[in-house]
Image 1 (cartoon, rainbow, N blue to C red):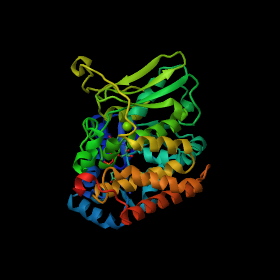
Image 2 (image 1 turned 90 degrees about the vertical axis):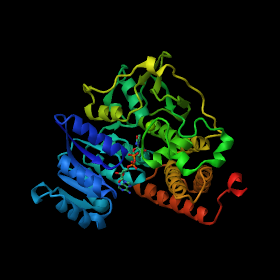
Image 3 (image 1 turned 30 degrees about the vertical axis):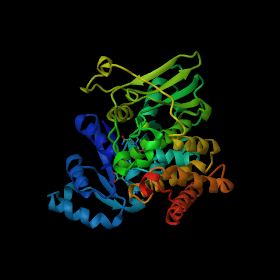
Image 4 (image 1 turned 180 degrees about the vertical axis):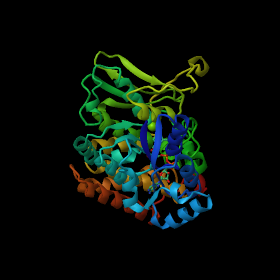
Length: 414
Ligand code: NAD
Ligand code: MG
């Protein structure tokens, strides 16, 4: 029986993790939950999973949660310890009885709870990629110190991790230490191409929030769905792969694979390429984190390639997806630059979702923030440096947006 904590339990990753816990009650027990604002769902989760501790991001919502639990008939004995705010999230993330922490919080907000879990020596199922991207130089040494293992829940990185298990270099001690696996020569990250995969680049002028938030293959939270449409998600995953598997950026490539059946590939010293395949369903990579190094028997739908019919691949067009290049550039610059790029992207996507900027403005404001940061870049940042540049970049984007530097798409101006 493995005890798990689920950070961001009301989100896409969180609810899928809890579905797995429901399906395999003899294997996984939920001991801690954290959530943002969805109290109705959280109350249901508390009733079903009976965690030992529950944290809310916003302390002000705790009395309301208490009231709702009482109204739902949850008696005192069944009420978990309730905590809130940044300290509360850290308490839940480092909860003593947990063996593994699933990080399903979205954005850099997941950084401090993730570090709390690592410092408490917990193994992690890392879904919250923004944490590693913003703070790779801080997170990797902490992992080394505590001995925590960072198991990738992102489907592409899970695929790479699964393929590596089949090589002589499946040295688990090397997991996410930043040291390259000796026989690993190249990583190919597959990308669905997102909501605008089949759009002509010129038509992106007409892209709306509704267009950008409807993903062809995966059902995910809104932020990552927009990141998929801009291919920033794949750019972020390139940096994530760099920190997890230690390869330099020239050996991490992106390939558009519209069917999302191959979840990524690795090339080895002898030129052999290994791939991991499956239906596009996040439950499989999440389950692998929970069951690793074992394989759990499941009744899940088996992959039938004759049903898929065709697997196709193409190179992504850099002109259509400028965010991809911005991510490579930030990764190569290293230090605090990925944190700036990530924070600028988070803010830009939030502004886009509020319809304050156009989809095509997203790379424009990110690039401006990264340009401005060049002279202030810190090569070997500490945690405080990462937190400071994260705040700076968000503010820089907000200021740029409020100055009205918004480019007006011709179609709207007409
Ligand atoms: P989501 O928006 O569906 O859920 C986010 C969760 O985090 C919710 O429980 C929300 O309450 C909580 N949260 C939001 N802001 C918070 C804050 N400031 N403090 C504390 N908690 C907060 O997002 P998601 O799609 O589940 O994605 C979660 C993470 O997993 C992201 O980093 C994403 O990139 C990554 N990821 C998601 C998928 C997917 O299929 N959804 C796949 C790969 C990676
Ligand atoms: Mg992914």
